[in-house]
Length: 399
Image (cartoon, rainbow, N blue to C red; front, side):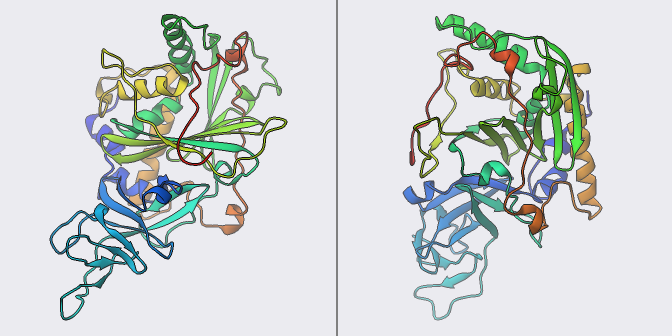
């Protein structure tokens, strides 16, 4: 149980808030590069700020304030130009730095500037940096850079605070119950076989490393030796808001992007090596997938990720942690909150927080991440086509 002041400090992400100041030290994905082929001007909200992402006619990317300073017109209606984005109302044009470069009819272009932020692309994603200069490098985590796997991306808006998503990743025990017991209950109601073998947890541990926390579990039916990568390696949480999973032939990552205090944009990347006879895709399929609800207004939890999403959203827009009763199985959440607050204090002292990448030698060609989350015991006795529930193939841009 924590105080209301601590909960506010952990969850509020707007400009000038302690957590907002920390999160602005990192790059965050705001969309997919392929989406700009369909619509080169897009409204974006990140860390409580309303912005517009655009790609100009020369291919340049800009991320600027949402409102034209002339008559407060929303610039998501803007027209891409060679020199920037033109407001549709009276033609004022803004470059990628937010500078007004054209004022039709006026005798001179006034030296006006609207907010602008750095934007870069990597691995098919568009990333933004809203923090102070000098900006760190955009981290080349291996799942963004590797080209030996077919990867797909699903983006889902969630009506809840980002920290509820991250707390879930520091909670190994929920897999046994949310995905096992509850998931199998959902499958039974659908007239389908169980999606997971419900294996009981024997012990859990958490290890700090230079980029975050490793979560490890030992469940019944697993050996306590070097062959059990779920226990010896586990899967990493990359500070502050990325969960990485997978093994030798399959990887995934989830990025929980704080839109504002009560909304999160969830990016889920799934990657697997091509099977014999398959070829590598030329482009990553991208799908915007909203939450699905049943007739009772409940989120449909027919696969692992929607089950997580219903747990996050089911806690409310911002969960009241002053009423929680954390127990021994929640030690990972306690550790993570402590790490967040320690890094908030670092920023307040003018120091660099953890997992900020500035060394190009570390960043190139990519930053490898060890993973050992194979879920062997949970898969035991379950046909692969049923593991995790009903598989939903992403559809949309590129394939």
